[in-house]
Image 1 (cartoon, one colour):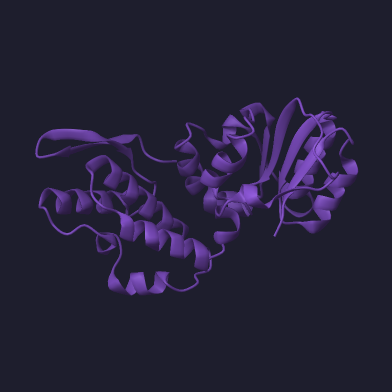
Image 2 (tube, rainbow, N blue to C red; image 1 turned 180 degrees about the vertical axis):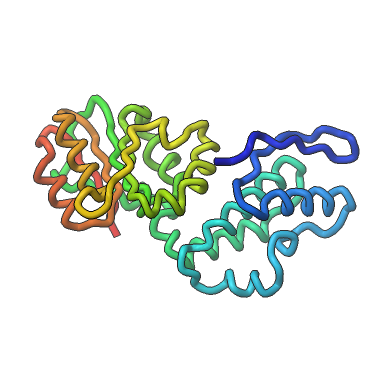
Length: 245
C-alpha cells in the first residue's frame, strides 16, 4: 500500500503533499527530484533511471515494467504539484505501455467493451463488475473507463485473485487503489485457492449466486471458455459485457 502522504517542502515553503509508492527506490527518487528542483537543475527521466535502464525500458520486458510505471506516475504527479514539465516522462510511459503486456489492459477499455448476449442493450437498473485483477491490473483505466462511467458501487464489485499473484502484486494493487481511496477489501474480494478454485471460476459462482436481473454485468477476463459460461449462466434480462480484442 502507498505510504501516508509525504509533505513537500522546498526552501522551507510547503508546496503540497504526495503519496509515495511502496517500492524500495521511491523514497530515494523523491529526495533526488526534490533536490534537483530546489537546485534549479534540468528535470527529466534521467533523475529516475540510469542510461542503461532507459535503454532497457525501450524494449519489451516481461512483467511489463510495473514498478517503473509507478515511479513515472509519481514523477508526473510531482511535476503537477511543483509545476515542472514532465512531457518526457509521459512519452516514456506511453511507449512502455505500448511495448509491454500492459497495453492490452491500459488503453481505452471502453472502446473494446462488447455486449455479447444480445444485439442491443436493454434497460438496466444497476451495474455489477466481476474482475480478475490478475489479468486486468490496470486499475486507473478500469476506474475511469468502467467503474466511474457506470457508477458501479463498491458492493457490486467482485474481485478475484489467485494466491501467487496476490503474493507478488498485492502491494502494487493496494498502492494503485489507494489513489481512489480504496483497498482490496473495499470490494467483495475473493482470495482464491489453487487448482480448481481459480479466480475465474469463483467469479462465475458469485454471479450465479446473485441471480441478477435487469443489470449491466461486466466481466474482466481473458478466458474464452469463461466468457461462454458467463453468457450461458446469465439471465436474458441482463446486458453482459466483455472486453474484445
